[in-house]
Image 1 (cartoon, rainbow, N blue to C red):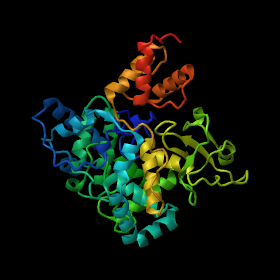
Image 2: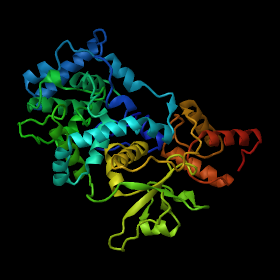
Image 3: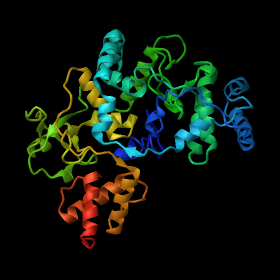
Image 4: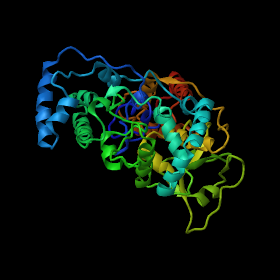
Length: 434
């Protein structure tokens, strides 16, 4: 799961489609490796006296917040120092930004589908109990489990209190991580596990489903009745907790997350926006059909579901109609590519085929420098892309849409290698005055 601050898992996830970070999901939106890094135990940096002073003051503050001295001594010993690897991972920026197809194909491959199917069968009784209580399908839970930690294989090896202290000491997002550190200490104070066993990602995400400490305190469940909420080792606790989160986030039992669709020739791709939600009958009236070619399911006005049309790789790529359960997946992680991958993996676990439509789209990966060049060229043409940062966020997508409309290109807001080539040609041909 991911939370609310702007970096990349924020760079790798949110960058792809320029969406704001979630306000209360579980893992910080930082690089894609944040949730389940297999990195070996980190090595502390040399003694940082300023950090030592900060830590001493923090521990005094924590005592005032009700954290006991024994918990503080166990979780944050006086000789603790910042973890260099945590800082390195937090500051790392990816060289490339994935296309949707590259992102999906690495996460929803045949090996993961097969292992996920095995896990469904292995724990089918437990998943049935969870679905009866919360209404969350087993395939959805297994999809999250598979993408977050590869079914529990990679839950992270960083000591959570030390990792959070390292990030809380850093000035960029100090308030957020300071709060998460206090929440982590509260979990220890409540006796859910020993401090030495509290390990997770470099960004503080923990357990089978990668909950941040704040999400743990709000949503973790003691499903096995042992008096502890153990999302690290107890699968009943982990799955009930994840289902509890999803149901509280607004999951509607019995409804699908979305589906791949076919657009009619000449379709106005300006309508493909996540913030534009219309009844399914509206989309059907525009000629959109299911991937099989069948009409979209018709519903009465009282039962009509609303959906948004997504083109994650531009108008030549795949098209998806996504419904309100997709919005719930987005609460977990504010990346459209991630949410589509969850939905597709769940579909594959239910026996549906691979996605095929839209495979002919330009699938060339682009570097951050190339994205910055698109932003610079748009700015030169007086289309405001926002900050020139190599991250195609919402302002950049709006600028692309405006430029495409001005020069007569299909309007989809998609930053691609083809768009960069078009901008280069326009500059060479002197077409800078529109």
